[in-house]
Length: 236
Image 1 (cartoon, rainbow, N blue to C red):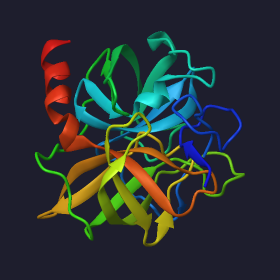
Image 2: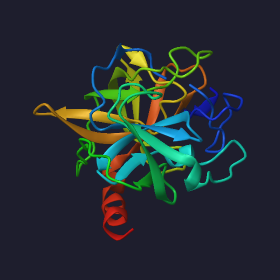
Image 3: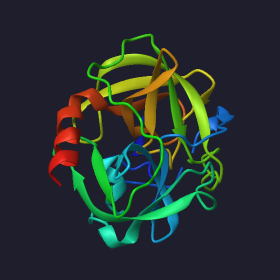
């Protein structure tokens, strides 16, 4: 099975490894009515990945979303996020990135905003999810393998199949399969939420899947990086 990281940098789909970012959103699923806790990650104003707002000044996304198809780090000056809108290309507000950080050996990255997002933030759990749990993926990725990124935020329900998978950099991962939709290119960096008493807790960051945008999706495990995320927010 060919694998692909699921960012939206324009390169050939289906190549393995973190530098193989390619364009793809959620196939199936349903249109999301709000963008609470979500951010569209833009490169030079064009859609690239999905992210989540973990505080008013920080967005969590996938590490591979910050590299181009040649494996070079994308300059922070080219990065921005759109927040408070279900559309990646309109509404809400666009906030520039002041600086960014990536975690070694994990498909996890943090974007520091140059001003407050003034938006609802997501919750970071202390423990990972369980096999068999129902979870929810969000993103602006492709709605078919050959489509452009979706202009509207979508949601897909996912079944957790493993909590001992790998992300694209070898960090601990979560593997899911779609219940009513599959993730695709452009959904990279987006959150996997588990609902607890009606509140969203982010258990994963989308890392990679197969190039046909079906079957298993693999997510970087957020609780595995929780201490690192909190340290970045406290010290950078």
